[in-house]
Length: 205
Image 1: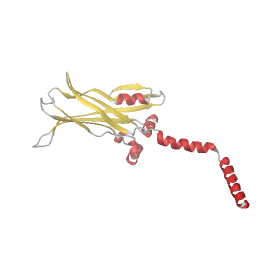
Image 2: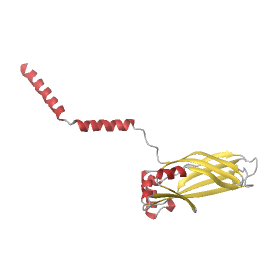
Image 3: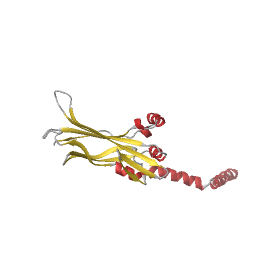
């Protein structure tokens, strides 16, 4: 009986020594990593979502206003910082349904935005045709690209009064205008795919 008690005491003492020998830092690190996985909120997924869109009358016809939520992947932002230009295409359509034939599309418009970066000047540029604006931070470029205001999409007389039209809008990264090696990356990786779904609504002039 005494020998059995001594054996249990020896095992208990050995177990305590083993626990004391385990460093606490790695254990704490593992616990912190586990808590991080549980409690840190997930970041926004990459992509484009249309938050709002409307076609408003103007002196010279009809203008489009829209707001986008644009979330760049880290790989796309790194590509811009290495001097790779990105082209974004905004597509807008107005269609009038016809039961006897294909839908009439009196308005089909596109607008192309170019994002570029000059490492020597540490300057970003957002261009629309010959017009451009310079920025010092990529977040500023994203904010301006996300807000579309006063885009002239139709002249006066292009739309018939009291007719119902279906408006369609989307924004997408034009991977066809990427340099050839990056076009292959765009085919193989979702990191290079950035596009919204078609946003549709009805309007009556």
